[in-house]
Image (cartoon, rainbow, N blue to C red; front, side, top):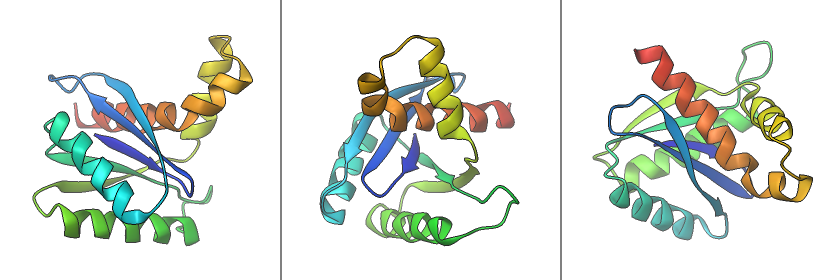
Length: 134
């Protein structure tokens, strides 16, 4: 399962059983952190998740800024809440841009793109990770 963690949403994607392809699952609308963690736990149970790939929003020069620290802090809380899950970070530079282009090419309306962009970014993160481990 992969996560695209933002301030207002968390995009979620999962892989098929063979670990070949990524599919978007849901966009969690962030409210309280405990609610976010609870919903994430429900999804991990539903999809029998043993590992999480979290997008790490590095700067274009490869350095880690404030957003990276926020993501790492959230993932530390995920690990604290669900100690059995393995956590991996994946460079997500341009994943949202790629997801947006893909949706535009598919002629998805701006209104619909806004609803699914984070989920699609999670798909790009997970697919990149899956491709790298093959």
